[in-house]
Length: 223
Ligand SMILES: CC(=O)N[C@H](C=O)[C@@H](O)[C@H](O)[C@H](O)COP(=O)(O)O
Image 1: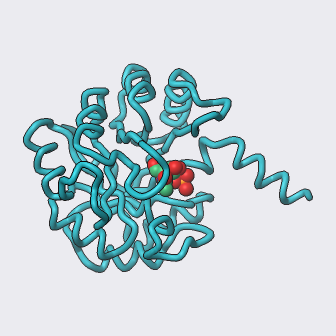
Image 2: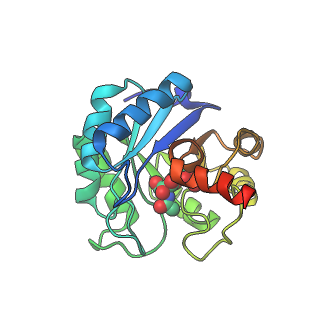
């Protein structure tokens, strides 16, 4: 297990291409991860078993793995089996849905985390959508708390940039686990603001690794 202090105040880059997109290829995502590490990423966040395997072979930094299955409800590493597969593919940390919603395999979040801790050496990042999720996830034994699902579960508005109010609210709860800011962080200034609001580290995806969206921002500005 790696020492979490290597992530303190650092950038984690999420490298994901979505179904049907031109860059949806494990080799491409592994190359994206390499490029991010050269640029200063302290860790990477990678989706899907093939992407995890190829990225593990390509970079030495800690890898947060997830497996998205579906696109509604609980879809980020929804079951223990998905999570175990992410660990088998080389994840140091497995990111799982950390909300209070029922999980498709009927296991509670606490049962899922306990099983992962018993069966693997991986840490567990709970992808949360609210402060109540974060509190429950900490009680369930999560090693890291993420704001990944803020604005996507109906409990929080979908802010234009990062949900800084939520970051500050969770930080004030003093849950005793690193708080990872994630979701709609679109500029270096916003990343810095997340740390200032109390985050331990920051995950940026789209603004670094999703050229179609970035192109759209520029194209819209010219329209
Ligand atoms: C809600 C959801 O499915 N989030 C996913 C989680 O892995 C990814 O699609 C995001 O790109 C990632 O969270 C990083 O966020 P952003 O791309 O906004 O920097």
